[in-house]
Amino acid sequence: MPSYLIKDTTREQREQIVSEALGALEASCDGCMPGLAEMYQAYIDGEMELRECNAAFNARYISGMQGPESRRSCMM
Image 1 (cartoon, rainbow, N blue to C red):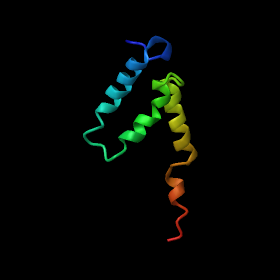
Image 2 (image 1 turned 90 degrees about the horizontal axis):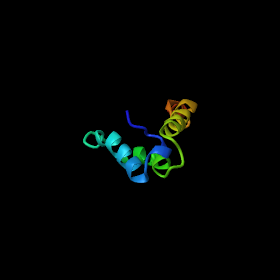
Image 3 (image 1 turned 120 degrees about the horizontal axis):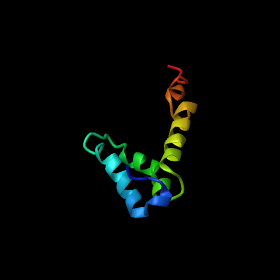
Image 4 (image 1 turned 120 degrees about the vertical axis):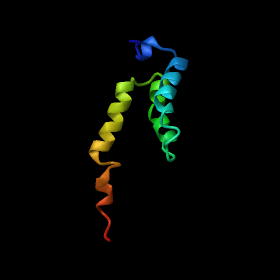
């Protein structure tokens, strides 16, 4: 199994890893692809490992910053 760690990959390899992983979504995506690609930009730039990018996304979702809780405040 290849290593996806920053220390074991070049920027070009990281771009390809993200592109291949997200590529399967392009045909059925309703405009979310740019947001998903941005989520992994820190990995591509060599600033965060993949697991850190995923953990940061999960932390925002679990905290409710972008979750269903924000919809409950509607007065209607």
